[in-house]
Length: 124
Length: 338
Ligand SMILES: [Fe+2]
Image (tube, rainbow over all chains, first blue to last red; front, side):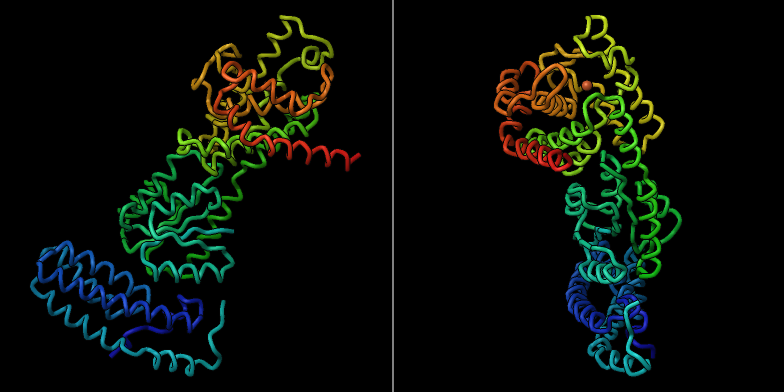
């Protein structure tokens, strides 16, 4: 199973600053939780435009932190909501939740990244 | 170089700030289009990296509004968005964006695109053109170049003060102030076309000679207008044109060349009119001594509503200490030069 976050990519987008990347991820997790609640509320209300809007937001944020599993699921939800095809949106949201759980602790990911490289990443 | 980052997503904004900071840019982050527009109005930002989808004012709308106004210099806008596809690119470029990048951003690529933007901005020949034109004007002026330097300071002070009036708040902002500072030295550029026997005549001008002299407003206005038409992107030329053409108009309609009155005279012309006269009064000329600030002030107050716009006169009165400070500063500079 692929890592929930491609740390190489994220750290590169953070200009090699691992600490900064960790802070970004922490913020991302907190906001994702809020977005997930909002998404589920929109699903209960069968509010397709609302679902599409929140999913779009999650997709963008996930792409930014290189959380590709999350990005793909959010994109799937956005597409279905835009097409008013809400049939398996619930399944995708479950998958989104699972991805979120895998994000629980990324500090080990960061540690592995740091130890994997012979020298610590430096600013470019 | 400063960069204004506009993104409603705080995390993206922070990441952009981090990357661009590492590239050596001074980054300010705005959370929406409105905030960004206000920051752009400060005149401090020429490079903008902007998200497309934002609540209230979208990136495209921001672009459109930026393009609708007259700025002191070009504003280079890069749109950053999750939307792909050729249709969207065209849409963005149509709104006036200079470049287009899809999210998630790649720092190296964004850095390269910003360098392109910087190059475009530096190629903009505005400042050089103004400088060359002002020098040309100076070469035909019997007064020293110090007149132009003082006058632009007076114009800046007046414009700053006017920006506090409710009536002018939407027109006069940081950009306007900078623009009038840059272009006011061109007010007499039309003197280039006045024959020496009139321009350099030491004594009083005959009525016929004075009519010729008055033409410097029209010559300057026409020249700058032609330049403005040839370079529609150089919007500072429009203000320069207005100033050259109207700085001898009077509020009561008895000025020249067209006898415009009141608000028919562009604000920049009304501002330069007072600044020009104040400096002439407080400087020694062949035909007159140097008047004190008090005398100049009395003369200007006396001409309120006739020669000068009362709003500009009251701006002058509010800031007379700053006028005095400018005068003193230049006196000290001249004394130091010897
Ligand atoms: Fe003049």
